[in-house]
Image: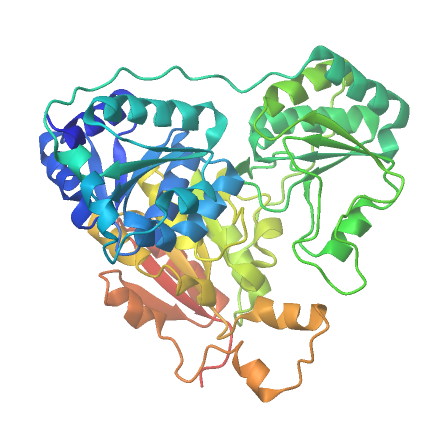
Length: 517
């Protein structure tokens, strides 16, 4: 058994049975070993950003890591943006990055680079295997680390370690549970809520946004009068069907500060201190009100769900919140715009759908419109690096093949990882892409004004426009094997969404939010 075969066997024994790959020469023995280890599902992506984003989406829905296979430093670099998003989401994944053979590195071949440094910028665990004897145990430790809270783990695999015979699989490494929260911390927060409930806000992270967590938050709010908010872009939240949902902390700093105005105590539950996404002239970066005391119930990575359930048992007692009436989404009609598109999504969303949201400005009303849609999971752009939506949808569909996946996708960011459609067609994944075409980087037009730049010049405005030539997403999709249709009315959008959900395999619906040129 060579090193690559032992590596694959170890990954399988450790619970990793999907590998998203874009391999090169240094990884050919790993690729060959896939035939010797057929239990490992290899999924080809035509760009490394697709590979890393798909591994992120897979892990968010499967609750366990996938592997990626990347080619040297440039391949890792090409996948870096979605590794950044995965790091922010605390997503477990194992990157296997092929490297030159140990004796070849000193020759400074054209593809030689500092892989360790690049990997360290997005990984909670990095190791370079130096011998065939150590490779399998290194792989087991990588999986153990990522399942114990390290997030992204990167294993650097020299080519000669992969091809050398005499390797043996390693037993899985121990997995550490998320750290529990001390009783004294829960007692302290309970005391604050009892004394200052109406002027207290709880800001929660994605790990709390599951049914049990939502129930606990609803009881705490009903019993104490505290405000509940969730972070702007949680990795995953289960929502819909009338379930209680905290308010979303606004993306715009001014709006977030309005949400927190009058708050004397801010309790963080698996979330970080809220800050503005960017610096703006004469505007604060830290969004906590002056004089507000910040309390940490649970740091990100700790057992925030257990902590909030225990907190509810102490402060809420038998409190029974008022259940709001469920307002069934109504089917819209008429011209297509951001509001009618959101209504169409809400009216047609199937039960147990998975939504990968990268609609940007075109999705402004999507979250609110789908609050009373059938129960579904919502996956957000955690790190702000665009190009996540299509790959995350791809990985989610592989993790949950029996569930429909809807990708809400802006046109500008779609072009970063448009190759995802090819993988969806090849794997025949049940992904419906709603491509919101407004012909512009609209969010950047907003930011151009917000940072105080002079937005009057034609050259500056041309840098935010996606015309000359216009992008034809139907042709781009069909060229990769995905059937596509263009819609201009809310009525047609509803019809095409329902058709796409009924038919197996991927579909793309290009929603035109602007007049055709």
